[in-house]
Amino acid sequence: MAFLAEEVVYCPYCGEALDVLIDHQEAGQQYIEDCQVCCRPIVFKLVLNEIGDVSVSVHDEDDAY
Image (cartoon, rainbow, N blue to C red):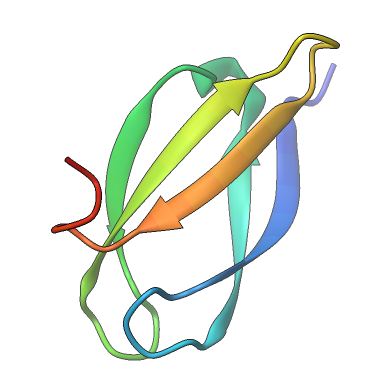
């Protein structure tokens, strides 16, 4: 069973649309990846909702904590 899904997120710094692969097995976790355009660090948060879907939110480093 494939747990990777392609998602489109928007960089909180430059606003560029980014295609990223999300691993659904990492639900409930947070990690940092650099923007592919402006190279600034984006904080990714993966949340599992009530029906078992994973949602992704992105934040800049200052908003994440």
